[in-house]
Amino acid sequence: MTRLLSLDSTTLGTTMKNKIGQVSLLSTLGGLTLTQIGIHAGWLQGYPWTILAAGFEAGTVGGLADWFAVSALFREIPIPIIRRHTNIIVKNRHQLTEGVVDLVTNRWLSPDVIREKLSDVPIAEALVRMLQEPHNQSRAFEFLRDFLGRFADSLDTPEVAQLFQKIFKDQIEGIDIAAPLGRWLDGTIRRGEHHQLWDMILTAAQRSLNEDSTRQMLVDKVNGTIQEYKNEGIFKKFFVGLGEFVGGVNADSVVSKILTAANEFINEAKDNPSHPARQRFDASLLEFAQKLASGDADAHATINNFKKKLVDNADAREIIQSLLSRFKSTMTDQLRHNDTPFMTLLVNNVQRLLKELESDKTAQRKIDAWMRETITTLINKYHHEIGNMVRSSLSKLDDVGLVNQIEEKVGNDLQFIRLNGAVVGGLAGILISLVKLVFLKQ
Image (cartoon, rainbow, N blue to C red; front, side):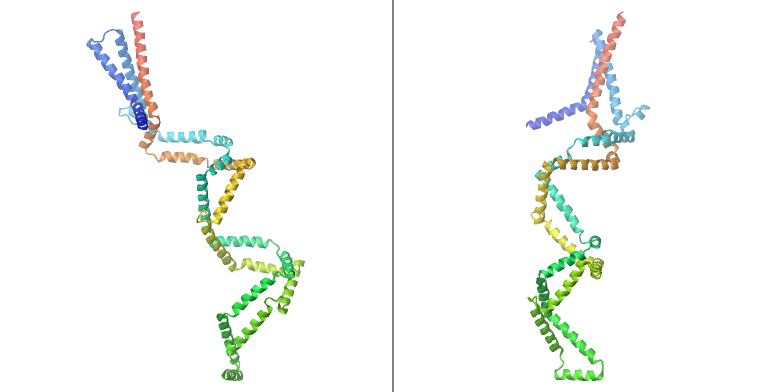
């Protein structure tokens, strides 16, 4: 109820302000009419009534003059000849717009004014304080999630893969990996740390050998070789055909023996670092590692050639793109919710950074200096956009909308101008009448 009464009193006060000019004019006009009728009818006699009538007359003239002046600002007054000097705001709209633009850009928001205001603003401190508020922090993390998500969406494009390939190529070409590789390889072999790799390779090879597809491939290859041998001459064809007829030449049997021998070899070499084949290969690899470490030209050329083929290979881009695609998928999953490991890590680190920055005044001063310099550069470069924004906002209003907005802001004060005109005019009329009365008596 109290609020309702407050609103009603506010509305009533606004209405009274909007009507005060009309009330003052009607009051002086009514007073003029009544006093003149009373004087001419003989009801009102004597100098006081004459002076009062003169006051009402002057107040009416002053009120009418100020009504015309105020009304002429906002709308056209249909009075011959002088109507051309009414509706001033609409007719001078362009000059008013440019005046407002000049006032805003060159006085209120000039580069010097903005720089002066920025010098007193603790930007970093205010930013830290704002980001420590839970709702602002939540919005900041939502922004980071959206930004990183958009970034991740474009990770597996061919252009990004090409960029990473170029970066990888530039880094690899500028690094001498031959000597460090040689030293690492030498130490690895001497310490026996490569034996586990040997076992993994041999196990994988044995698994592949024993697959049905491998066996069928070998059978097809042996059959093809037998057929080629038979086609080399009549006698070879006869004897090979005879061997096939009696079962002496059989591709399945040959492949079985090959696979059996290969499995026996792998079983002997697996888990056996002292196997002759492994020792010979280790010796060759150790010799190559020593050449790399000592700067042997041929060994270094081999590595450099391998590097060039690695980074220039057309398949390298596909590999990089495949890795980026997997990384994109991982990032997308991690950014899907706030409780994922990545988001948890991000939130914890940002909060830790904010706490450290809150007490680190040196870092705050550096951030303030950087931000002021950046903002100043942007202001100098794009300061004209402030004027364009003001100009654009004003241009969106039609004539009626512009007049209504101005009248809404200053209309109440202009009503008091009309009131002052009536009051000052009335007082001036009374004063003039008094002066005339004094001089006429003399």
